[in-house]
Image (cartoon, rainbow, N blue to C red):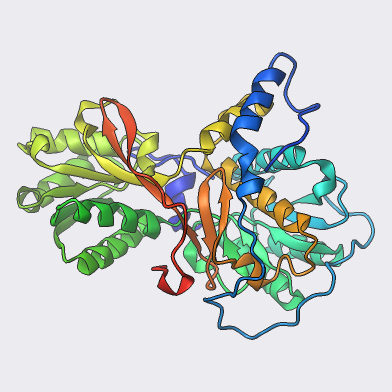
Length: 435
């Protein structure tokens, strides 16, 4: 796994967290005793997704300046039985590449993606597609082999892989064979022409949070960041957004995942904090509370400062007195809570954001197939400028393969997360996109 992906996929000693349609029939879906609840939630919550899905294929692709490709007259045809776990009976074959047998937590991540994909397909109905789940083992070689299988077997599109190295490897097979990839890596360097990332990209979360903070009058910032690639990435975006907003960055310090390192990082930046309106702490887990506690012990009056975080804070103890009043940007939770209830009823486990991304990828694929459009998975269709709606909020694919998402801004008030500014319901023209 690329270091940049740890924001949503790995627990740490002082921070971090583990994060990764309309249904007409619930038969065989929820265990006995939960059917009425699940059906009610489905009808009132997720049934709006297909009705709201934005699939305006006739719209111009405002941001695509690449070579014009011939419009397909039909989707690829299945060629014999598929290798892997097969779900659904639809005419069109779709491959889902996951690190099912990868070491470490790779297998756990893959299992959640697999379950969420199954849930989405059950809700859409088995005839929506034939979904073939293939195990990459979490390696580049595995991604190449499974992608070659998918092409030979007539898969129309490839969902996954998860890790950035695997995504790049799969692309080396998919691109020459005119297959689009919709992958789950959060390393934006894995995105490219025809390789789209479903994941949340840290720079967008930082930009949304800091833009809101400057918009309410905060003009000077200090940042306490984790060592490593994630810390470097968010610092870069922090500097870009502050410069664009005319705000000042007074200082940056970095910590490793130990108490002594956190104390040293706070002590190093104390003079800058004294001169700042806001303190940016992007990491999650125990990091926000630990850093705030040290700042207070060093004489910082937290009531006079605004703590700024990211969606990583949802893995933190938000009832902590140190975090009250803090603000952060995160995905729109409106549909995700319904998805969580359905997932838990089906698999007796709480899903992370990974599950939501897997669900949305399969649901979007089914929605595109339902139009009968033979060009459903071309760049023009996938780069639909009006975007898509999912359980992880509104999103759209940009011409460079990155995903732009509608993010909300939240504040912690008395231990509860309250919406300060809801996620936008519509996207600006692609030419105006910041990412």
